[in-house]
Amino acid sequence: MTTLVRLEILRTLRNKRYLMFTVLYPALLYVFFISAYGSGGTVDGGVSVKSYFMVSMATFGAVGAVLTGSAQRISLERKSGWTRQLRLTALPGRAYTLGKIAACAVTTLPAILVVFAIGAIEGVDLTAAQWLGLAAALWLGSFVFAALGVALGYAAEPDAVQPVVMIVYMLMALFGGTWFPVSDSLKGYARFNPVYDYNQLASFVHGQGVATAAIAVLAAFLALFTAAAAVLYRKDARRA
Image (tube, rainbow, N blue to C red; front, side, top):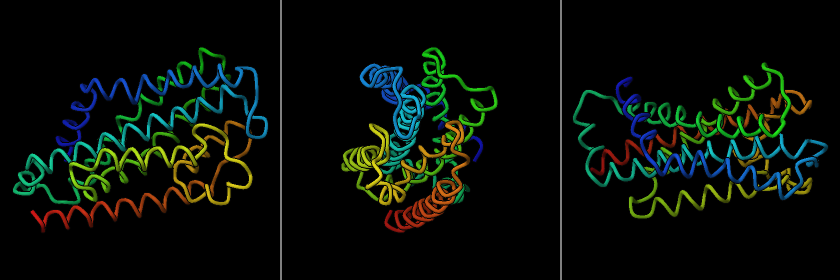
């Protein structure tokens, strides 16, 4: 499984589309949003614009990296017959699924760190412990969406997976606080959106304490998406 993870990481980092849409694009959007809202302003209960959109664009890039990377690659592997070839090896199904999730989650780090670097340049002021804690929280949270990407890769037909992923991705971002703060009237519903809970992992750097409720919800989503990915993988294996 270690070899599979290493190969998946190298394939992703060599992909120019990955670098453009999941690393550079969120960074450009971050600069756009802080300019549009006013870099000295505040949102969502006094959180600075620079800090708020630094987190939301980092999560946007991370979710995009794992959703598009895992789902579309799996669909192509299914279409080309590569997945079927892997099943003929000694690699167990759970190792393949977990390997995909782990490899995709590692590739979220560039998306997170590039936006953080721009945030630091723009004047986001955090302690070293806060920077490290925030990076770790967002990286660990990305495993949830890596599992979702694997599940979508097996749930959708290869020719339909790209629009399915984009619809899911954009809807979760739209109602998850990525583009704008979620209003009080929508927060009750937003708590069932994993992207909203993912953004809430940054609450400790805003002086709001550790978001234990968000952690619990994300853990539940991780278990659900991982189980779904495993079931769909076995279903695809029986069909092949």
